[in-house]
Image (tube, rainbow, N blue to C red; front, side, top):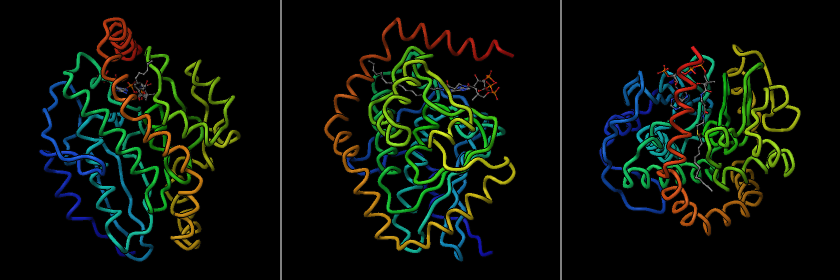
Length: 298
Ligand SMILES: CC/C=C\C/C=C\C/C=C\C=C\CC(=O)SCCNC(=O)CCNC(=O)[C@H](O)C(C)(C)COP(=O)(O)OP(=O)(O)OC[C@H]1O[C@@H](n2cnc3c(N)ncnc32)[C@H](O)[C@@H]1OP(=O)(O)O
């Protein structure tokens, strides 16, 4: 197998000074996070490899301990996606995790705790952009879900084209448990997979589905033992790439158009809601208690 890492991407990801490169906005300077805490450096957090033979890249999320989506991390993912999208030979990307038993625990909650208004706004815009990129990319996208996949984690997996998950983990939208509400575009992308009622019910309860239930409902496409998830994702990717790229991408565009149109017309209002809602004292209290409960479960 001929593997090479994307020098350009690594280079880009290591130097996070100006963001974002994503479509639909001009670069802005980033206030450096003093809140976001991770056991990995920005350089270690995202590893991209490319297999020339299969024409498939792997985006390995390694922001320990739980791949919490901080502004810097989302920006890295966004830049990497853009680079892969522009790499003509690349036809697909597998998104995998380097965190034990966690694919992604969603947004880094620290981003929402006592945030500065400026950073909060950039954070949400960058998340919106990253989601749109992933949801509409010409690349075939497969999520290799080797662990829990919660809220923002489900944002990533549900934006992909195909999902392989390990058994006995949790997946879904639990935002209400944090006293917040998932954005409509994330809800729409989950609804596209599992239908209205299951989405409504799980959203209102903050219910996380087991891998097995997720398979039954269509929130994931396959459940295989944890040590086979990546291999299965690679095999499924190879099968998917037998379909001509442009026809596959046009079909995806056709199917996702309504969601994208709704997103584009609602994204400004969604941003306003987020930046107004998160700093509220009542929300801050609930978020704080939630973080405390995570820490005290040990
Ligand atoms: C009308 C109003 C409208 C709109 C409002 C606006 C918009 C909505 C806004 C936001 C949408 C948010 C989506 C999200 O993604 S919120 C995040 C949701 N995620 C979670 O709830 C996951 C929480 N984590 C867990 O359940 C577990 O950690 C686990 C199952 C993923 C893993 O369990 P483990 O036992 O393996 O590990 P832990 O010991 O629990 O965790 C290790 C370490 O990591 C910290 N941590 C976990 N998750 C997060 C996180 N999401 N962000 C930051 N930090 C996290 C955890 O506290 C531990 O830290 P310490 O080692 O104790 O310091």
